[in-house]
Image 1 (cartoon, helix red, strand yellow):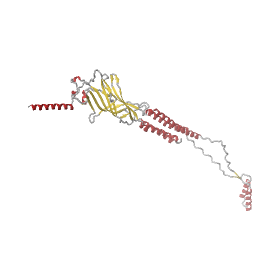
Image 2 (image 1 turned 90 degrees about the vertical axis):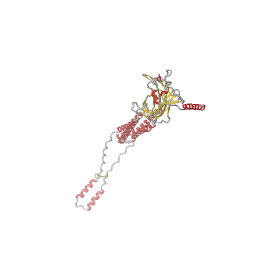
Image 3 (image 1 turned 90 degrees about the horizontal axis):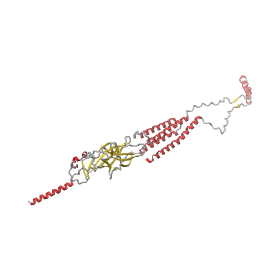
Image 4 (image 1 turned 120 degrees about the vertical axis):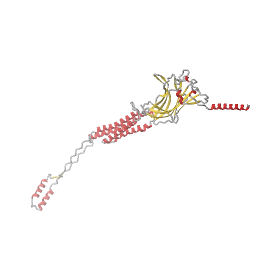
Length: 447
C-alpha cells in the first residue's frame, strides 16, 4: 500500500516537471484578448498611446529595393520598398509564458488596435504585394514595442525642372505624413540605428542614383501641424545617350549644309536642295529630342543648342540667296561677229599697163582672121607689160604692254559671288566652333 502511494507521487512529480518543461519550450496560441488590458474598455484604438502627456513617437525605416519607370512626361517614378513602423503601446498586455524576444501576431489584429495613420503624401498609386502570401507581418516585443513591416510598390510623383536638360539633376522624394494626428499626439522620427537602406545594384537606363538621404518635411496646415518624413533620391542624367543621338547627329547636319559653299554658284538646284534637306532633317531631329519631355514653357538647354544649329543651317541657305542676288540674271547671248571681207580679187588690173593689156585682149576677141604671128605678138606684148600689184591684209597693230583687258559686268558679279562663298567657308565653321565651345564650357560642371 505504501509502495503504491510512493509510485503515484513519483508519477505526479514527473508529470508536473514534463508539463513545466513543455510550457517553457512551447507557447500556446494567442487570441486578441490575450494582449488587451484586463478591462478591454480601457483600450481605445482611436487614441494614440501617449505616456505622461508626451506625443507618441513612431520610428520609421525604409528599405529601397528598386527604382524604375522614371517618366519625364508624367513626372512620375516607381519604387519597391519595405516600409517598417515601430511604436510602443504601454496599454497592451504581454502574453503569458512569453520567453522569446518577440512574438509574431496576426496582422488582422491591427484593425482593432491603434496604429499610425501614415500615408504616402506624393503617391499616385500604391500596390500591396499578395504573392505568395500577403507581404506584411507584425511583431510584439517584450517591452511592448510593436513592429509593423509591409512590402509595397509605389508610383510616386516627382517635380522635375528641365531648364538645363539633358544636363539636369533631379530630386525625387518619398514622403510619409500623418493623416489625422497632429504633432501634439504623434511624431514621426527616423530609426536612429538604420533609417534607410538602398540597394547598391539599382541601375537606371538614363539616370544615375548619385545620392540619397533622409529629411523632415513637417508642414503646417490650417488644421494644425502634421508630422512628415521624406526620403530624397538625387538622380543625375547620363549624357551618353543624348551625345550620340542628339548632339553629334545635329552637328553633322550643320556641317553637311556647309558643303554648298564649295558648289559652283551657277548650280542652283544642287545648293537649294542641299540647304532645304538639311533644314528639314534638323527640324525632325529637334522634334525627336522633345518627344519624351512634357511641353514646358521655358527654354531648355537642348532647345538652345538645336535652335542655334537651325539658325546656322538657315543662314547657309540664305547665304546662297545672297550669292544668287550678287550673281544676277544670266547674260544675254553675245552678237555674232561680222565675217571678214572676202578678197575676190587678188590682182589689180588698174595698175599702169593694164589698159594696154585690156585693149590687146579686145583685139583678140574681135579679130576673126588673126594669124598665128599676130597672136604671138599680142602674147609677147602681155608678157612685156608691167606686173600687177598684189594686195595683202595689213597685220593688226601691236597693243602696248600696259593695256589690260577689262572684265565684263558678268565676270565681276561672278567674282563677287565666289568671294562670298570663300568668306563663308571660313566664317561659318569658325563661329559654330566658338559657340559650341562656349556651350560645353557653360555646362561642363553639370556633366
